[in-house]
View 1 (cartoon, rainbow, N blue to C red):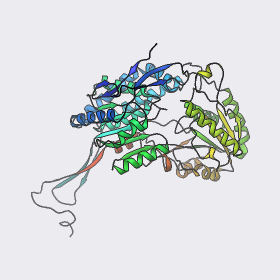
View 2 (view 1 turned 90 degrees about the vertical axis):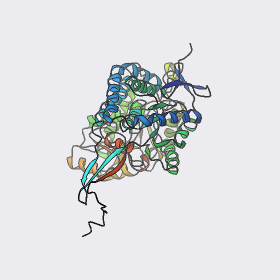
View 3 (view 1 turned 30 degrees about the horizontal axis):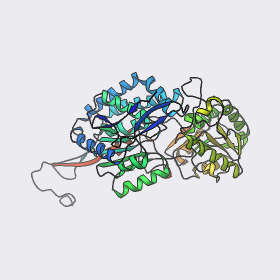
View 4 (view 1 turned 120 degrees about the vertical axis):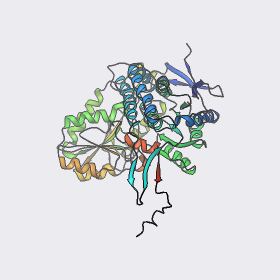
Length: 497
């Protein structure tokens, strides 16, 4: 049976790639299941999309922000009705279990409702002028066509983080979903269209990074770029955007630490470690990749974590009894295998997992066993480099101060967690941990849409997604002065005395 063919969205019309070529979207839990075929786009398709977005911008920017917001609110209502349908489709294309894909759709719903509220709150400032009979204020202005490049691990939530604030600010968009998960972005934009989004305001080009992503960055019509992905690719994106004087938001990798002190509630910490390390099969930029445990409780904590990891049910995420799904593709399996091999070569011990799962239904997909690595030292590659798989390292520490030094001793800075009953340590950790996010007595995953999301060091370049930080990125400040004195007044000169 032939699979369904999905097209690009250009100027409100669904169109094939100009080349006529397509690529397949394959279920990572069952490689015999073809989710669909998608347009294999190139620079000429991006050019069509950007031109359509430029044309739509002329009228969209003049649409009152509350009216733009009403479309987002209706989109949230549509997504709510289709939550189960879209979650099941996402599990097929991405692999994570149904409870998580339902959460992914819910995050898009939450973002829609949150940003809809911002349509009546795009506040600027009014401030006294230094001169008489003169009024001063600042207002947010749209920027133009926003180019967006998305990852595969949150294929509806992350596009919503980018699209919804950009739209409420008055921008138009060209978005390229990850080649592994294009269907969820199409579903999201279909909901926007049904909610009343005018043609050309959002355009979709599907395909691969070099052929379809790079032209979005390089096109003279895109005015602002948002990228989520690896730090290696993000460096290339950021350099290209900087050379073209385009504002660029980079949300990239992490090597996130969870600290467990001796006074922690170990049962709670174990629950957090299991969810943080193996939720989404460890394929989150916020995944718990390192657990720094005080020596006096390390043996007990590690033994109990290994037992819990070994008991996880791994399989097809469409089965409600499954707790962890597959990795996204063969390349990610090979990365997990590589880092397990490196860990052994460096002197660490693999206490469970460390290999691909085979036999039966596992042979149809890309499954990797939940893996716990012990005997890890802070300078080892397994403790420094992002794996992006279900692999967590255990490191020992003598107490709070050493734990903070280990946690900060990496080139990333996205998410961190501290488990302790000591309120002083809790507030010190919020101050001392070098990260964009810090949790107390909660795992490193679980960000909420109304707070800023992003990190420091190699994780990001200072911009934030979520909350008002997203509005700051997708709008430009304009200062406005109204002089009603009916005479020339010179700031800094006529008021000098």
